[in-house]
Amino acid sequence: MKWSPTLLGHFFFFFLGSWLISTIFIDFFAVMAVFKNVSNIFEAGKVGMYVFSSFNKFEILFGFFLLLISFKNPMENIKIKNTMIGLSLILLGFALYYNFSLSPKITSLTYSMHDIGISNKGYEEAEKLHEVFHKRYVFMDSIKLFLLLTLLCLGIGKGKTFKGLNQEGETKR
Image (cartoon, rainbow, N blue to C red; front, top):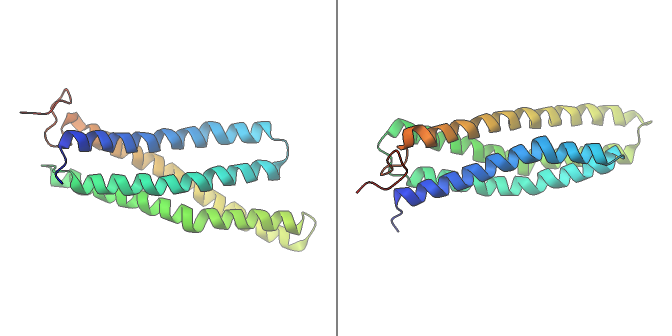
């Protein structure tokens, strides 16, 4: 099946924009609201873990579709195309790592800390490891936002990233 460059461009920006806006909303608004409005830190953490674990599954889809569209794009500038493919691969890798490794570890440690209790010896170790994984998640999320913005700039790049699009976004004839 042959896809028109215009349709590919629309799909690309839909998935990229959805991922970027969702990430910004969850990271900067939803999580802050949960921790501001839920008084029990463990309960707030459970809500946060549920939100992030659920969103991780969508991120895999976003990453997969961005990668697929980047491959299918009949772009004239091979350097930009390869950059888009590479960035999409990195983003998909992040999503897979979040979903299958980092989020489950954070969730498991959180429940362990709750079960152990703050007065037990093992709590401090679990808390330190939890903090390491949480900082890694935040750091990787910052990189993810930067990569999503970079992809957005490459996609917009003078309106010509997707072959067949002119400055107005119309298909050339």
